[in-house]
Length: 100
Ligand SMILES: [Zn+2]
Image (cartoon, rainbow, N blue to C red; front, side, top):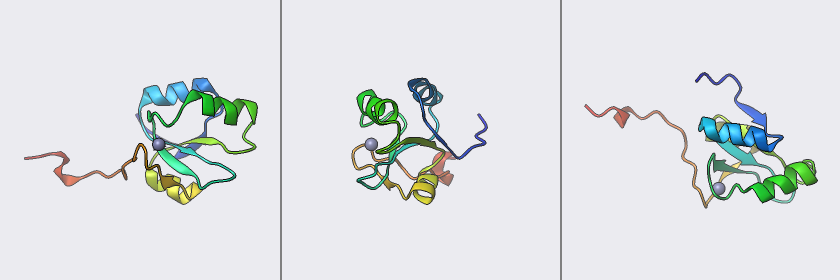
C-alpha cells in the first residue's frame, strides 16, 4: 500500500474503522488542555466512547483525532508525545530485520 498523505483528520467511526483495518500508521489525539499524544493504531487507549465525545458530540472543540504515517510526523506536525500506555515505536527500517 502506497501512502501519499502523511496525516489526515479522522472525522467518523467509519474512517477510524478503515484505518485500523489497514493497520498502517498511528493515531494522534490532540486536546486543548493537554499535550497531543501519539498512539498505536489499535491501542486500547483509543476507545470509541472518547472518540464519540470528542469528534461527534464536541465536534473537535476540545481536541481532534488524526491519522499519521509515523511517530516522526506526529511529533513534527502536532508536537505529539508518545503515549506511555501503548508505547508506539519510532518507525525505523532496521538492517537486522533481514537476518542473514
Ligand atoms: Zn496509547
